[in-house]
Every structure is written in C-alpha cells, then in structure tokens.
Amino acid sequence: MKFFRLGYFEWGKIKPEVWIEKWAELFLTDKERREDDQVYESLIQKKGQLSAEDFEQIGRWKEGCLIKEPGKEHGRWNPRTPVAYGVWMEARGTLPPLLVHGNFDDNFAKKFLEDWSKKTFAIQGKGGKVRNVRFGLARASTLLHFISGGRFPIYDSLVWYALHRMGTPLPWEMTVNVDAYLKTFYPLFYSIASRCGLSNSPEDLRRLDNALRCYGRRERRTC
Image (cartoon, rainbow, N blue to C red; front, side, top):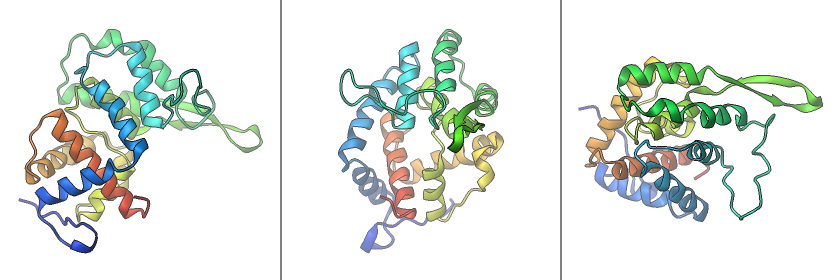
C-alpha cells in the first residue's frame, strides 16, 4: 500500500482517519463553502437525473457564480468572461437528452472527458482582444462527476496541490491528459478513500473531496 504523507498544522503527521475528519471539517468552517456544499448536495442527490437547469447550476457552482440574492444576477455569469459561460450553456442545452442510457463506465468517461475538455470558449481581455480558452479537464471532470452520480471525482488544481503535499505529485499534464486522469488519479482517489476508512458512498467521497481541496488550499497558503 502506497504511503501518503498526512498532516494537520502543529500536530505533524497523523493517522488517515484523523486527517479526513480534521480537513473535511476545516473546509466547512467557511460560510460560503457551507452554502456551496448545500448546492452540491442538492445536485448529487439527483444521482445523475439532471435537468437543463441543473446543468446551468453545476456551471455556476463550479465557477463561483451562484445567485446569492433572489433577483440579483452574478456579474461574471455572461459571455466573454473567464467562466466558460458558453460551454456551460451548451451542456445545459445538449446533455440532458443524452443521459438516459446511464452507462457511465470507463469507456464512456474517456470519450466524455476528451470531447468536453477540448471545447473552447472566448474571453475578452485588455483592449478588447478576444482569445479562445480550453474548457479543460477540471470543468469536464466536474460535469462527469455529477452525471455519474459522484462515481468519477473532480480533478482540479487544488486537488493537484493536495496530492503534491501528500507526497504523490501528479504531472502538470494532468490538466489536459484524460488517460492520466483515468489510469492514475481515479484509482488514487479511491485508494486514499480506503486508507481514510471511507466507503464509496457519495457522502463519504464528498468528504474526501472537501478535505483534499482544503489541504490543497493550505499548500497554496490560501486555506
């Protein structure tokens, strides 16, 4: 069994089951994170049976563009901003009819991640210059996570930093490498869950996701 380097502030190295308890709990000490977690729970409980509106909500959740006050739109949720608005709207318009088969195996995941991570959206920079940006693996894996009912974990930069801190760094190419996601990160995520005494339930896997994201923020000195 691969050794993971786990710590918690002044305690130094701690047991995996203590690590998951402390870091998952720390993640939810922030009010905004607790609110975001409630939105996550409302979406994951649908077990992949998602409506068009749900797909837009997934995009808002991922991009930090949730509506906090009724009737007050988030200022960044529009085209030509860095939040991939156009691709999320494409997901809203095209994905729901395709999800009725429910066959979310590794082959489906590979094709889905390849197709969606390479999509691009336009953002407007200084001087009005427009450039195209990849939707990327972090966003594509977020879509896959929700449509699979939580089976496939979300991979982003915070998770990368967390794994680096644990002594299991992944190459930077993970941001675009679908094979690395499926062959390296996916089994590693479940290996960490097992070491922490977690089941494969969506609730337990969300605790691991929260712990990793908080652990990754600490590595970047932002937690």
